[in-house]
Image (cartoon, rainbow, N blue to C red):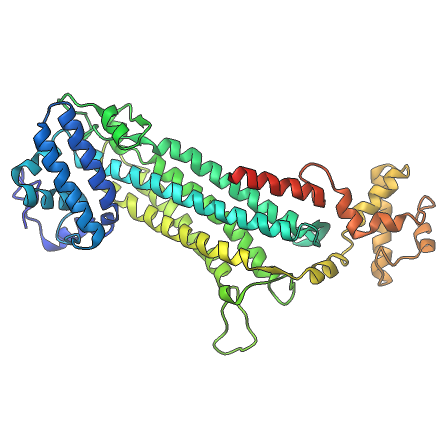
Length: 457
């Protein structure tokens, strides 16, 4: 099969080379963007009298028919074609004759593929933002449900201070809001039309790049034709943002895996989002969280793949850049799948609040509150810190907690301690007093939930 670029060569390549060079197996998913872009290009050519209005109408009608047939499944990409761009142009020419050959006037596959890729990425960015909002909303709803459920907070995976489960979940919602913000900002740099840059140097035709960009919903056009066809920064930034999003999901996955274990028993995942063991009948495995944690590495790999492809490329287009799409396609598919399963998993997750409270009662996570109590009584913080540490050490040796220590025992360490110490070390009071902006008190968590919900809107 001769190629549409035959001329300088005879257009006949070895079958092995053909398969190696072909991209239609994966770039066919951009058929809608390719056809939409071609329709706008034909309209611009007519607008500038490069082709006649009648020719443009014939081309546009032909392209619309191809789009309908591909969307309905009546027409499938020919695997023998080199790429989706050549396939569409070939079918168009077969259907409308030589007029179809005029479509590629003042255009190159270099700017055509860059255009398709940007249009597709813009669309997928919107999809991922929407799904990330759904997950952030699920987290804020769950935070509202458990805004007063006391649990231990951790540093170094050691029990540190009491927090509420609602506060904990809001922390992850805040991460997702930043992901949304990054993706929204990234979209600004994707929203640049390269069409009209042609192969690398622009064109001798009197085109109107801004007119064509506006038809396609772009806010800007690339300012330099060399840069326009060779820029893949937007895709790298997009993959970086997706990697950060997956890192946040992976961190939450780690928590969920720990919390649902028998050792913690802080949460219960729905049967709909867990699996069993083929040999151990008692098992309930958090496979969805584990898979998300595992797939994070896959998205990282997609980012590194594209960074490596681009690191040594001279201007302008090089065939290496055909390798730009599969990593992005893979990352988008992976992230969307993870977000979809995660939203359902969070919505159906139940907290075991009694177990959380029991865990919070161990580990002396109210020791800082004891030190703060002594500071209020007049001691410098470092002195109060030392006395509190001595009291904790005494409790450990005598199998007691700060709540069960007698007042006489307390007074062995400081005469400043009176019976109001029990109020100071009560876990509920410890949480309630942390009412600073962004803190773990119920009132503060309610403000955080409101902030998340407003940000999502």
